[in-house]
Length: 183
Image 1 (cartoon, rainbow, N blue to C red):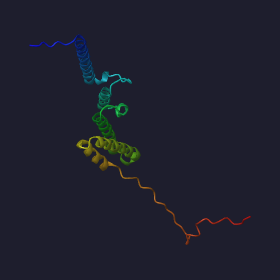
Image 2 (image 1 turned 90 degrees about the horizontal axis):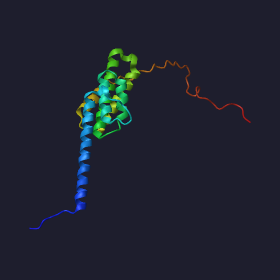
Image 3 (image 1 turned 180 degrees about the vertical axis):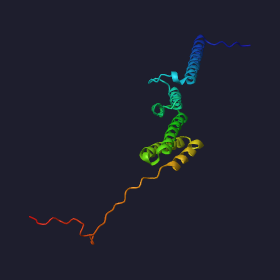
Image 4 (image 1 turned 120 degrees about the vertical axis):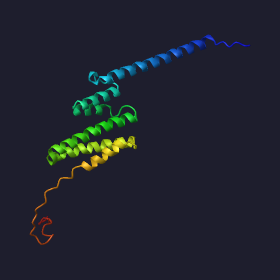
């Protein structure tokens, strides 16, 4: 029976690869623990440039639950291009939901008096829901809310009618003519 022995350089490289793999797994476990700990208490998250997008998302969601939707939109806007497509869809969905909720609240409170603001909020909600559906066409919640946004879109404001009461009988009498005179 023949014994198989590995050479010393092969054993060293296998050991180094094993240590790198163990270190990589350890770092991922530590990052997961840190993200879970902060996600459980989002009010303790300090937002910096180096904050992972998932934590910014958790902080934005917490801000929205606390009623500070402006800050939540700001945080969502900071991470709307980060992460995977699913993450981007979740960010856009939450932004659209905030816009739609605020538009409906404003429309029910004051109605036509805030027509421009309600129209703008509904339009922003529709654009974000459409972005979600481009990423995830099977997202039925986004489809339903987009349909709702189309239904509550306020009608365009009517422009005042022109009260022009013309007395001229000919179109030619109102057209400008060439100036008289010449060289």
